[in-house]
Length: 247
Ligand code: ATP
Image 1: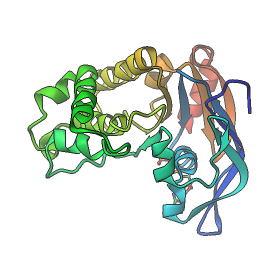
Image 2 (image 1 turned 180 degrees about the horizontal axis):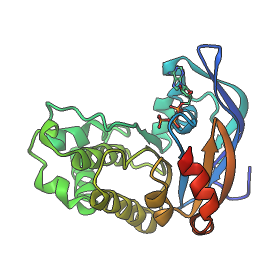
Image 3 (image 1 turned 120 degrees about the horizontal axis):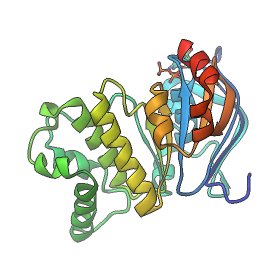
Image 4 (image 1 turned 90 degrees about the vertical axis):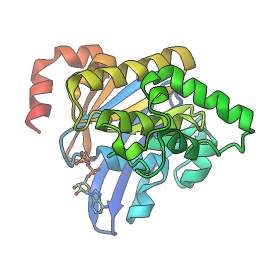
């Protein structure tokens, strides 16, 4: 494990249903208080990599057949998702997944019971989420099902933050959203990194937006990492970006 890394994945290989090889030889690291982008086209293996880390791949008959995942210096390769959430590692799934018939605030509260908090603590957590997502405060009594796509994405992120995570795995937060909302969401992520010291591993097809905010980036092609580097450096490499976008 690289010295000081919060998360380190070494040579993992994930197979679905015993036969479908989704990713192979994936190695990556996330430093404390950093935003790391995992970029790639449709089907490149971004979601699989995140689910392998969070333990959710097994729910879809996915299996890590090789490699090792370490978080905060401990082997978590086979640690179940609920235990990881307790230890501060949480995933926000692709597609938002709000409870449409619950209010925005009730949705947030569903994420808040990991550490068996007091009512007072829950209120503090809610206030902190509303500080970063003022829009959610305005909408807190509204049904989440009536919120816009961007607002629902904020609810999904906010719900994950209610567990007071150290590392958040975000799967395609920009999907289907207007550019302005994408910038708003990434700005909040950056603020959470800077002010709360959180780290984010963000899977994205939207390379342009992700690279504007990330510290470091990995590019996935056909289940393998084809390139990596400082986000700034990758941003300048038009050739690389073009080949990735051609997907
Ligand atoms: P997308 O943006 O479309 O979600 P992705 O980069 O996240 O793409 P994955 O969803 O990880 O890619 O898919 C990687 C490969 O694994 C693809 O070939 C996909 O068809 C396959 N795959 C993903 N989930 C499953 C599953 N539950 N069962 C079988 N194969 C799967």
